[in-house]
View 1 (spheres, rainbow, N blue to C red):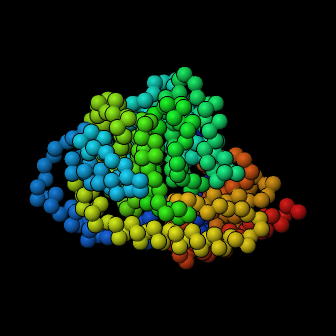
View 2: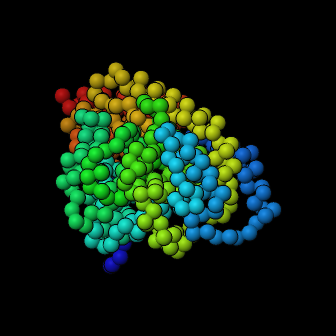
View 3: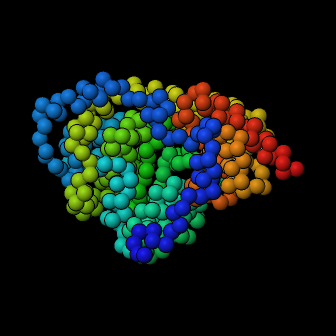
Length: 385
């Protein structure tokens, strides 16, 4: 067999098989806002869509509809610090941030090239690297410095075939945010792809700065969308913002986006209204997530067998379990205790024992799930002695 993942073992792993056998458990991994009570106001969506049906015309634009791009530019002008971009030149509307990643991998790499990505990350990067037949080189994040990027390791991994650095800020799942310029990135001089889909969910900091505003001299592609920001994963709209230092790539990126034209016209048409009237919902969603994080942090504060750092932003908690047992064994035992969490190795981290939970889960299931988590972990650690 040849082609994508031809040699991969895609059978369900032990954890997934066990989960399929158990029905009475609380899922603390849920990242779907629509199944956790976070529903964007239906009246705003109806108002945003209504005029489209009266003026419906298919007018494809390889960069996206101009009013859509203007709304995105206005959003970045209001960030702290502001990122000033030209809606005519600097924005490419896509069907999702995943599609934006694919476009940029196609833009920047040839088969055999490599890109640098954080060692702790979700599997999307591995699949994209396989699709484009490039090497994914993982740079470590330093747990002693709040999961900050290790500049020396980043520099060491770069060679003559390195084409880009991937940065996730806010980072998933550690919640780390890049708050200031990183000198090693300037020294490398490589294009940066910055994923900031959790930017509207600060927790331990007041706001999430756009990396392109912190390092304007570097070519930076900023990825975001409405899935996390407005809890609208079903409406499928994302974007790639090109800062002025990256405008040398825009003509080729336009051809790539024109080849796919993945973003549908209706959602593009709706975006200006969603942006203009959705601020209250974004604030409400942020408050719910912040309250949920605080609840879980308080519940874990007196649990001796775990260590957890408050995230700068996002809704995940990356929890260290102080046990010599491996993560698979821990997650399986927690399933037996009635709660499901992700193991750290799901995010590509193989140091120590970590579990990951989502604070998007609605109350009271969140607190009940964490109670089961704590009880299960105490039993696990007690069995170590």
